[in-house]
Image (cartoon, rainbow, N blue to C red):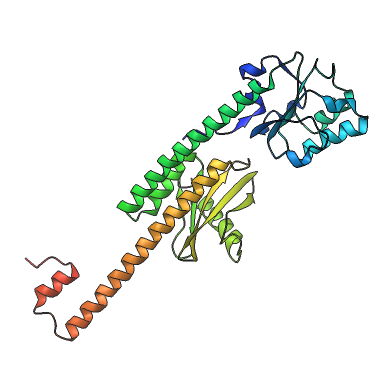
Length: 311
């Protein structure tokens, strides 16, 4: 599965509609994620801006007093907007220095179009790109789900499920269970490393009611992050499936893949429990039939036990 399901300011600048744009501040924020594009001219922007919004404006708000101009920028930064694009030549001719300084201090990308542009072309281009990415994400998630379904229907192999998740992400996968040995995919290089992961995982989830009910994130040494998902079956948390990420915040795609995997593992564990219970029930019934002389001979008993007849 492709990992490129997030659009960042750096990639936006490579789009044809941004070929006349120039980055004047916030160069360290080019990895900010872009989730949508908005056109905003009003000064009270906080109620209308959500995380990862890229804002387009002609700069009407820059005609206000300095404190009001700074307030506009501060609101965008607090709301964790992706960046700000200002069209020069329509309402304003340049960006005040205090705005540039604030954007640089906060690593907030500030772009300018030095000639008038059609905002509708920008929104259509970026929105189309985002929608296509989401469509591809759904297609890949459907393929991932089908593979998990095939495995859970054909076997009771926990490791096979973990291997599919590893194939789709490339990250270290950890399966932590309170009733059986932990499983890893791929297997750690040394037994000491495996013991460390087992000890760390157990320490985080034991007695942690929140981790037993919903996804959790645990910082790890070495600037790593353990993303954990409980495997819940019939209201009971039987195990946990975790993924070790190299320090970055987990992507939405990763969270969805982990959730799908946990649900498949729950189905698989339920089948295993059912088969074990059926086996015990059959054994008990066989013993009762032997004690009550319901079996005609040794061959009938062997047949019930699934043992081949003696040669």
